Image (cartoon, rainbow, N blue to C red; front, top):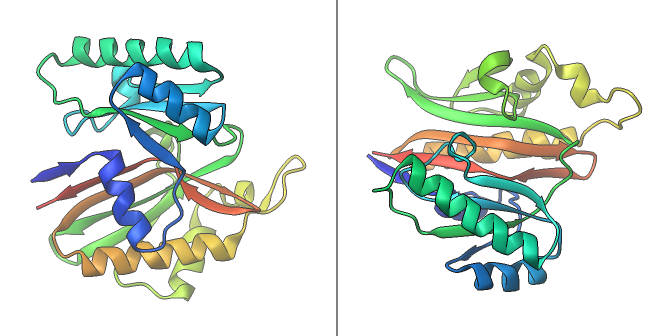
Length: 217
C-alpha cells in the first residue's frame, strides 16, 4: 500500500479537474512565511507526512494564521506536535494553504473497494464530525448525473445545502460535477484503493477541496 500526502493527493485531483485550494509546500519556517505572503493572509498550515494522514488528531493543523510571526510560531508548533506523536515519522514539510471561510458548508466525498460490488463512491456532510454524524449516501461507480443528484438529496442534512438562516443555496451543479469527476478518477485509477476528500468546501460560488487522502495498492 502507498499512502499519499495531501499535497500529492491534490495533484491527482487537479489532474481530473477537481477544484482545490491554492497551496505550497514549505521546508523551513522562513520559506513558509515567504510563501504565505504570496498566497495572502490568512492561511492554513498543515503537516505533510505519509505517516500522519489524520493531521488534526496529531496537532498538525493550524488555521487562520494572520501574519509572518504567527507563521513562524505555527511552523515550530506543528513540527513539535508531529515529532511528539511519532518521532520516526517521515516529515516532508508544512503545506501553506489559502484559508477558506470556516463558516462555509463542508462536505465529504470518499471511495473504497467493496469486495462484492467493486469501487463505490460516498457523499455526505463533512468536517471533523463526519464519523459521528454518519450522514452519507453511496453508489456503485461509475455514476451518472442522476445518481449524483440523488446522492446529494438523500442525506439527512440536505436542507443545510439548500441554505438555512440566510445562507444562499450551494452551487449544486458544481457539486454534481465534482462527484462525476471523482467517479471518473476512481474508475480510471484502478490501483486507487481508498479516497477521502474532507473537507470539500461548498457554497454558492462552487466547490474546493481543502484536504484529501489517498491510498494506492
